[in-house]
Structures are given as structure tokens and as C-alpha cells.
Length: 148
Image (spheres, rainbow, N blue to C red):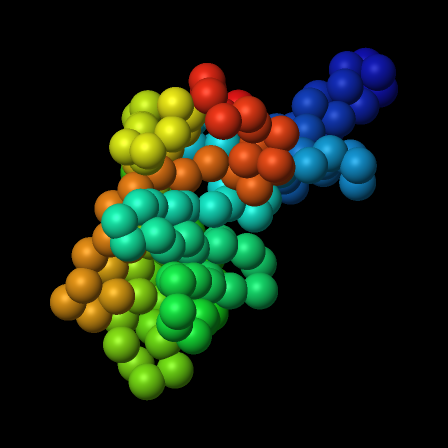
């Protein structure tokens, strides 16, 4: 009889346990990706005519263009929805600065590269369009073929 009461008490206590399962300390959260590109690693969006690029890094979003001073905005993190991710910020003068990346093949129109993401950069009323990939993939890429 005691065994049955003990078993019943153990089962009742187990049913009342509302604590969440404990994750091992070495288990990482799933990596946020857009297509094959990790969103928490440095990414470069780039375009031609005129030449420009935006570096998306933890420290900030930096737009660089030929013969102009770089424009920097804080990186407040990204939002992702399906095959689109975007970063919304502002320049120091409060001009809106938004980078939108879409998981789709993209050509920059000048090279024979195929990038994994298309890019749209909006700075105030100006819109730049181009392609994007991880900085790591761009450093490994040749002048032709897929940037992976």
C-alpha cells in the first residue's frame, strides 16, 4: 500500500512540474539565415553605376561610395519575414537608413558573379539596388560563378 501511495505522490508531483526543460550550456540558438547567408555574420550589399557598398556588421551599417564620406548608422538588429530580412536605422542627422535583403539570385550587371541575395538600400528619398552576400563568401569568390 505504501508503494502505491508513494508512486501516486511521485506521479502527482511530476504532473505539477511546470519548469521549462534546461538546455545544456554549450547548446547554441539556431543560426538566423536568409537563404544560405547567416544574418549574424558580416554581410556586404553592393551595386554599380554608381559604385557603392553597405557593410552590415555588429558595429553598424556603413554606406561607402566613390568620392564621398562614408555614412554610418547604428545596427539595431534585423527583422526577417520569409525570404526577406531588413535593418532599419537612421544616420546621425536622423535621415532614415534601411537595408532590405531578399533571398534570390542576383547579378550586379558588370561581373559574371551570381550572388545569393538581392539588395535595396534606402537613404532618405534615395534608393540604391544591387546584390549581397556574406563578406566571407565575397573574399573567397572568383570573378565568375556563384558567390557561396
